[in-house]
Image (cartoon, rainbow, N blue to C red):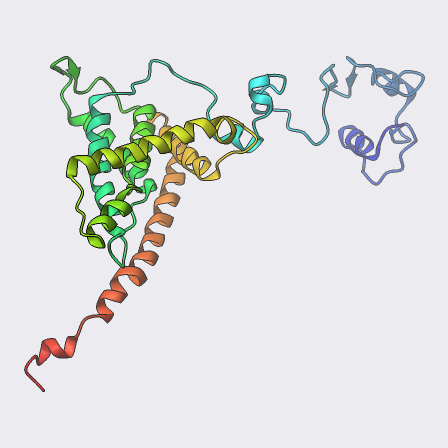
Length: 308
């Protein structure tokens, strides 16, 4: 027996009132037997698969209730073992395609890495010797390096110096990601600063600079070694995504679409992002830096320094 939704559709196509009395087979009483036969009804009241119902083609396509039937839902095959265990949120954000010919270790990458790592490491290390710290976020590097990289791609000449091409092509996403990863790894403080500083500060045992450098370098390498051991469980398992990295990946994808295929949607996304970014930056900058600085100013002493 036809359902109520089907009866309403047939009634609308027939041109009758939806409130008209319908027979159990879903047609108004005014529908004749010839019309039912032309509609493709069998003796049991069922529709033939390829028949026409008042100008509406009914073919063999299966319509699934409550599920998207567009092509976008078929982009990721669930029978693929490499994709099956990846959460849907990750699939919708992270690109599953790779271009092996995309630029990676270029002259621009090394220039931007030095540009963002050196001040970031200095600020991060200096903040541990001060009561107030200056934050150096990796999101700042991710945003700034994108525009600086595109600027370098426009102004650098396309020629080789000592076998190195200064401008091999447009600014690529892999260069952008590598600069951000390098800054996230290098623009931080070193964990071995504490024993080096304590030895000189409390025990009057200054460490040789070369020994201190190699000691701090060995601590970093040891940390990366332990990270490599645990990456099989913490990084490669798709069931446990790092959501901060997922946020950065979404920003990478938005910046990539804005560079390669600028659309109104990508432009609006970046406008909203920058509006929120400047609002949050202003909200954090005023109470954390400006207000404490103005509160520490002795204005009356400046006006009358000799007044007892």
